Amino acid sequence: MLVEETPVFSKFSQIDQIGIVVKNMEKNLKFYKKLFGIEPFLTLESPTGSTIDSAKLKIGLFQLGDVQLELIQVLEGETIHSEFLENKGEGLHHLGFIVEDIEEELVRLEKEGIKILERGIIQEMVKFAYLDTEKTLGIIVELIQLTL
Image (cartoon, rainbow, N blue to C red; front, side):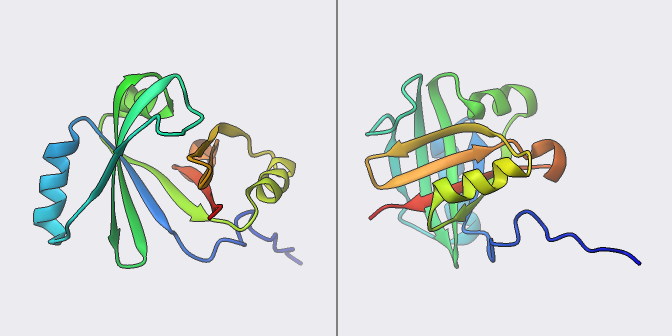
């Protein structure tokens, strides 16, 4: 008799964010505007209250139905985004999932052997953690907790 194992990520019912690393934000925003016909894009630069002090990022955000598309351009410094860009070039970096309690989820996932690659807080409004899931899932998973 086969025993089914419960998937580690069974608590996540939908993808909330798709993160894409880009070299040139403006060029990509124009392309996505033309492709999807969506504007305006919210753009911001970090660190704007972010706990990732070693780098400066430019972020472009827009909603594509129920999913947020996040374009990420590294302006300076080293992050997992710059490492991705150097090793793979532009492209799909992560899938993001909104969770109610990020600390609880991180403890649960650590028990399953899933480590944190990078984590932080943005302007006391968003807690996030990138997880080391690329070898097992083929992509990085980000947990996002909105603290509003």
